[in-house]
Every structure is written in structure tokens, then in C-alpha cells.
Length: 246
Length: 320
Figure (tube, each protein chain N blue to C red):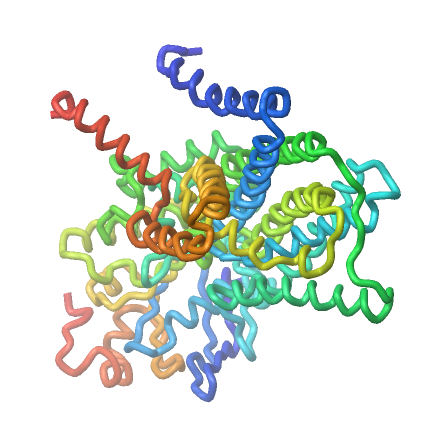
């Protein structure tokens, strides 16, 4: 049984098929990378899984139960958490309050206020934001805001975490820290799907990579397989790419 | 327990001053003239409407212009049931009817955002007015209704009671888990949904709860009018006033809408009775425009900033 499974998942925006008959699966404990050129439908696929959008047609199954048609808050409580490509934090709230919202409302059984504060404090420690716990979230740097989104998502006690371009716009040091963070999250037993353009990160930490192009799945395999796939090189990596040749 | 880090002075002053003020106002009919009592009645009325408007619109950023509709429902409840039962039940009926109306309207309209939501809620005021007008003319064959009479003191104390309940409810919502959910919706609705908050339900319930107090106040104020018709009951000014007063006062704390309502209604009183009454709307408008441009966080925001600057100047050396 796969943890998450999509069958012929399709989404049209007007006449344009943003995601077209994509079959995919994610197994427990994996880190799956989702790559592809801009406009390939990666974020749309995320939105379909997290129920911001509804697939038409297509089926998405989580733990063997159909989940499309549910509201986003239900998806979250089932154990699928996400971050956003453009950060969506609660800017005027203190950092710790952002995380508390996650632990108060995200888990299937909500925590008490005291427990929520405790969990939030621990998670801020985990992502390295303890020092800025009481700063308004809007005053953080982009790298820290992205970490805050991760902490908020983790606060909802997810089984599956979806990271949408966590590394975009980060500098070299921040990039290495973010990769380390993802590995730490995996160690907690959380399954991860991540959209990413930073090839070094993708190749370095993913167990499996799915490649989308014009809404269709064109490859699915280990980093080596994907890096050597002719179609992927043609549409995305480019001929001179040294991706995967570490 | 460790009591050492409780600021006793602060703990005494924070609820102390508002309660003292409340007591002073509560005894107004004993020492004040009829004019003072009436003026205070209007202050309290506008505070109730503005604070309950802020419960929903201040927190979520959805600008509702439906206040007049809920206020009007209260007025009509008083007209329909005022003679048939004790007045306290009339207030409950008004609140309940308004809650149901707001719940239904919220379920339909809260998927709209920004200006569309504002337009639709204002449409509700016009719709209510026209439907009731049509009903009265064609089916009842009358225009308007008489409302039972209540003395000024009775009206004053009923309103004061509603005012206390409104403030307590607003305070509890602000401080509760529910209020945190509401604030996250105001900050970023999409993220709130994906963080496990049932966004639709939280919005609809809050919208409906805020409507209760507007209708309750309407039911009480109806007895002051003694004769009402749809034009009086569904006066659009009742929709604009709370929004303007809340913006003027600032919405960051619960004092903002209270201060906004009092200052605005006093200003209205001054301008309308003084020698400037012909220019009242003009001056009113100018003040509002100036507030939006120069005081984006309202009067209370300004005071807070001044206070922080004052305190900052005093403690600057110690902070190094």
C-alpha cells in the first residue's frame, strides 16, 4: 500500500491542462522530489493534493482512502501538511504564535493551550528560530520565514510533508542548512515531497524523483536514472548539465 | 506559584479604569440631566454597534456593510413583539433572528472577498428595506408600525447591559483559541485553511455572533423612536458608521472601536448642534480622510506610538 497515490490526476485551467493524467505514488519514509520547468504543473499538483484545488477527473488516495473533494483543513488534519512557494505566514503575529496555530488546529485531536505552547517552543528549537520566537513573523528574513512555515507545518503533526521550493532564493550557507533540516525531518519518520529547482539539493537528498513537463509525467525514478534520462535532459536539465555527476 | 513577575500596578489599573468609567456612566441618570442621559445612550449604542462590527470585520478584514440590516431586524422585532411579551424576550428574539439571518447570509456570501463582499452585504440592507416596504404596502396595507414606549432610563440601562455583554464577548473571542483562528484568517486565509482551521465555519459563526448585538441594540432603540418604517429601520448610515468609527479609533485593541465610537458620535453631536451644522458632513469627511492618510492605526494607534516614544526616551540610556 502506498501512503499517497494519484490515478490519472487532471486539472484544466480553461482549455489548458495544467496537470494531465498524472499517475504517481509516494511511499512511507521516502523523500520524493518533484521537478520540471516553470509552468510544468508542480505547484498545481501540490494544490490538488492539499485540496486547494480539486482534480477533474482523477483520484487521489491517502492511506487507501479517496481524499479529493475534502476541504483543506480536513486534509491537514488527516496528516498532510504543506508550505507555500511564496511564503504565507501570519505576518503580524509573533513567530511562536504562527506555530501555535499549527499545533492548536492541525492535529486530528487538537492540543491544549499549554501543550501547544510546549510543542511550538520545541519546534522553533528544531528549526533554529528560538531566538526570534517573539518577533513579529513579517520581520524575519526570507530563509527564516521559510523555516517558520516548515515549523508551522510540522506543528500539525503530519505524516506527509509537502515542501514547495523551500530552497529558492537562499544563499549557499542557508541552502546547506535547509538540506540538513530536511534530513532531520525525515529522521522523525515524516515522508516528504518537495518541489525544487536547486539540482544539487534534489540530487543529494531525494530517494526518488518525478519529472513533470507541460502537465505530464515524463520520468519517475532514482536521481541517477532521472539525470541520465534523455527526455529529461532535453526538456529540463539541458545538454551540458552536470546534474548528478558528483 | 511565583508572584514576583506579576505587575501588580498594571493588574490593578488595566481593568480598574474601564470599570470605574463604567460605574460613573451607569449612575449618569442619577446625577445627569436628560440631555446627558440621551447623549450617553447614543455613545453606548454606537460603541455596541462598532465593537460588534469589529469582532468580525476587524479581525478578518472582511468589510461588512450589513450592520444596518441586523440593526433593522432588531427594530422590527421590537415593533412586532413589543406588546406581546416582556421586553427582555423581545431582545432575545431580535438577537436570535439576526443570528439566523447573518448565518444564512454568511454562508452564501463569505466566499466573496474584498469589495464584492462589501457590496453584497450592503445589498442586504437595501433588500431588507424594499422587501419589508413591499410587504407592508401590498399585504398589510399599512406603512410602518408603532413601537411600545420605554422611558429614557429604561432604554439607557438595557443598552448598558447589552454593552457589557458585547464587550465581554468581544474580549473572550479575542483572547480565545477561536480568536486565534479568526486572526489567522485575517492574516492569511489560505494558510489558515491548510493549517487545519475550518475557515468557512469560523467566519460564518463569528459573522452571526456579531449580528446578535446589533439587533439587540436595535430592539432597544426602536422604543425611543415609537414609530418606525423600513426607511427609518434600515438607514444605511447604520452600516457606514461602525466601519468609519472603527477605522477612526483603530482596531488593534478593544479600546480602539470604543474610543472611535465615542469621539465620532460626540463630534457628530457638536457639529450638528453648533453653528457649523451646515458644514457637518464636509468636516466629518475631512476628518475621516485625514485619519486614513495620517493615522492608519487610528487614534488609539497614535496614542500608543506617542506613549512608546515617551517611554522609549526615558528608558533609552538603560537599554544602551
